[in-house]
Length: 165
Image 1 (cartoon, one colour):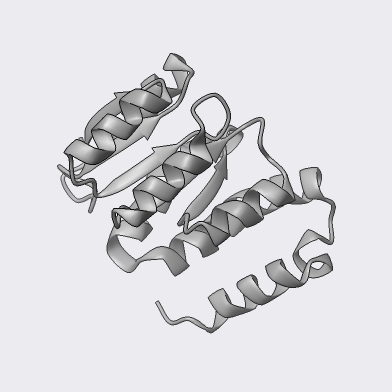
Image 2: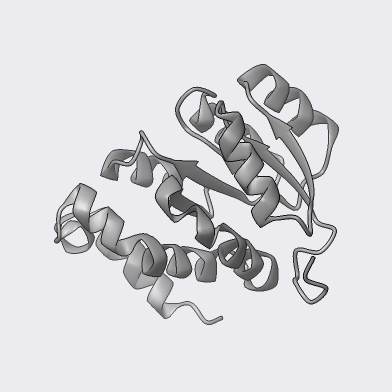
């Protein structure tokens, strides 16, 4: 356990239908108190029963976008972690619904630093770190010009650049 992490003793909910992903999240965030759910119904109950410092949601298999709406409406900073829903449409939807990050599962190792930035500085730096970390993967999946091709992404990224940390 790292005694200097801003994540120390934070309460985090991780929701994924793959138990091995939840195990990895637990290992990466061993300084946190973690609640885990493998299905939508359990996640909804946990969201209603606790106050989370951060929520990590899969998209596929657990109705992640509905959980995102619920989590954000409760004021919980929520990060999307996905493998199968890695599309520009899913990224855009996550941003519009209030996610603070959208991380491909192949970059799960970046979960901790993104959450540390989130806890320390807020959502804008966590999005910047997300794009730095996963930008190449997004370009591979979405096309090399994805940031400039879509007006929504152009404006969102420009807004992030203009925000102070």
